[in-house]
Length: 244
Image 1 (tube, rainbow, N blue to C red):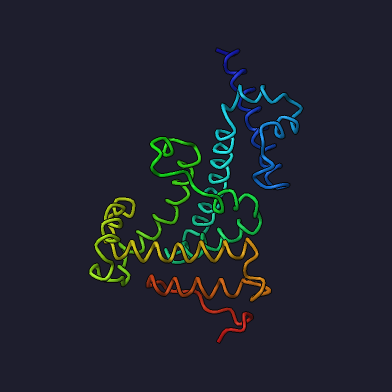
Image 2 (cartoon, rainbow, N blue to C red):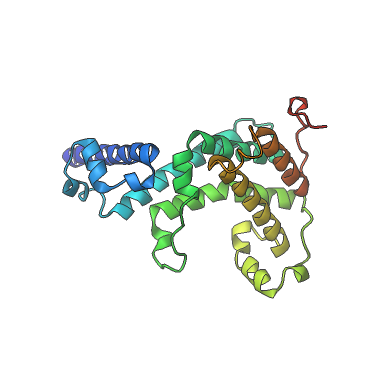
């Protein structure tokens, strides 16, 4: 048992070293730089030796994605729980700002998580991957807060007849992920999520420089509009931002 435990610890340490090397290559050269041979060279190993730990390049990338999602999720949970007196709105604003902060501090990692195509949802095995399950844990941080906001005080949302039968049917299928929120509320939550996600992507990928030297005040204004749409008490506008 002791020998087996020691072997398990050694294997876990090697797996951690492999993923750390893969992350280093990702930061230095993008996803295309994270090949098994490149990772092996980084560690002074042979490429075939890596197959004892990861069966394929896809397995390694999925494991790296899982680690990054879990790192981000832990950071957001820490922010959410840092102030016991914070209400739901403060918690939601906190993790939204935290997502932006993490993304700006880790653009290569953010690009891997949010800038690359996701696995085909029609692939019956994609939900079993470590990366997908970690992504669901990340998403749950936002979904749980939004559903709590709605159950505490339902926010106004589009009437179902305006959504159309096709969209309405898809939203109804996802109601279980939103703790019973009606389709209109799910629609609004999804709309605000894509708005937040798109804004952060544009800033991280350098698509706002033409208009804004510093997107901080714009992000704060957008976050305030989202909060108001959800019926939250929004933080006051920072006088230093130049807003009225």
